[in-house]
View 1 (cartoon, one colour):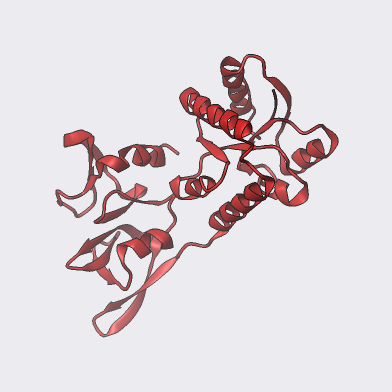
View 2 (tube, helix red, strand yellow):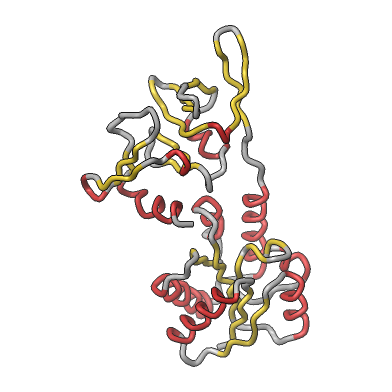
Amino acid sequence: MTVLIIEDEIHAARRLESLIRELWPDVIIEGFVDAVKSAVKWLNNHPTPDLIFMDIQLGDGLSFEIFEMTDVKSPVIFTTAYDEYALKAFKVNSIDYILKPVDKDELHAALKKFNTLTQERSAPVQDLTESIGKVMQLLSRKYKERFVVKVGEHLRTIEVKDIEYFFSADKAAFCHTKDGRNHVLDFTMDQLVDLVDPSVFFRINRKYLVSSAAITDIISYTNSRLKLVLPGLKDEDCVVARERVQDFRKWLDR
């Protein structure tokens, strides 16, 4: 089995190599490349590897550009620090991903998936290209930078960078800003999740969408949940839902 590693952090590349060899002793590491251009050059001048491990953000651009510049015939496992919303896009087809720092158990699961897909021959290049296109759209999208709110008879704009969290109350959605004020918004909580940058804001439950910068304390709570302390808030509902705790931890530790 042959593998190509595309990764611009030498320590990350070496650690990944070590873990792969531990789980897959007979593997042949064909090469290491650290940039989009060098990856394209390598792929154009070497036999197709059985599998490629690919970081998303390289020194000279996003690794998805490689697919636009050459015909990538190998299955790909992405190693990435991107959040859950980008990662979901990978799940539509045969591409797998591993969050950094690479965990041995997650790597093992990804390799098992690769073996299964290889045996079933269920990873066509067309599906790979479609999946990459969806991820490119997601990663290149622009998130909302400001909201227009009504204050009395006046309209004013609020910069997203000044918002500490969003919350729902009385069938409406509000934002809480750094100056301690709450403003009603013309959006639902579900809409807000798609409008703001998921690397900055995380929806801990149906009621709250919080900024990492606004969290002043995290307290262990009942039923393996986590309670957050936020500015100007004493709500017992500010708790990370049990089913979201694992994703919340990954989001904090990206």
